[in-house]
Length: 381
Image (cartoon, rainbow, N blue to C red; front, side, top):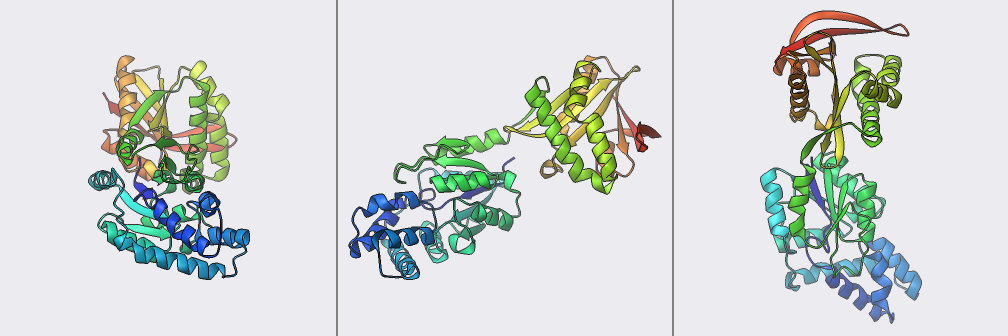
């Protein structure tokens, strides 16, 4: 589920790359530089420090990098009110869509703070944007991920739940390195930037709402091939080592993951032991799974049901419970059964709300001296 959209600014919120190009080339030409437009192409989306350090060296400019940067931003800020620049096509609709869906909005721009604020004033973006991060606030500019991670931190949203919109090669690289779903905006005025490394490439911001809706679509997929089995194994490693250290020892976690959640164990369970596994996928990202197996009596055992931490507390598990109940009814079973560690309090409350009741306490020797101290719970169907 996408919880936040982080916009690059120039070339995304407004079609301002030509405006920047004009400022930068005019400064370079004042120092007698030739071919300035082509020389600055590789620096679109990167920091002013990177740009002017390279230009100073290339054209042997006597002014300091600091003075060149100051001149650049003074010109940019002063010219914004009379620039004629407007919001990019589709931006207003995208901002309203995010507002209606409760999606947080941030801006991560390599530009300087005073210029960002001038653009926000000019385009009246303050009612929409919750936080912003600027190039002068991070140690490493794009293509490093620092600026996007800073914006996510200020929003208090995990990177994997953020979507980045970028129009530059460096920006796309930064978004991907931050672990965020990255949209490459193929803006023809952004100087031929290559955004093909993005998760998806768009021609218009009008395409973004549909992408967000697709990424928020939850699917339950049967685990029937090696790729999906490996997804379950990866989820198990992450979830068990994140959630269970406060409940059981690390030694027991390692043993149980290897014995019950490894690739050989899952493959055997499916091919030999009559288990069915289901993968919960949000957009194209696996976020959880469950496993069921028929018991000898009238119960279907819900052997496993796990969700990644960022997706808990959002009622995402409902579809896995529903799938387990569907399988049970197809098999003619009258109830669902599960086991939960007595100290695993949050899932225990979830199971009780789902209509399960505690039937008995059960201690099971699982080998190597490890004991599972569980409640056995059942729900009548």
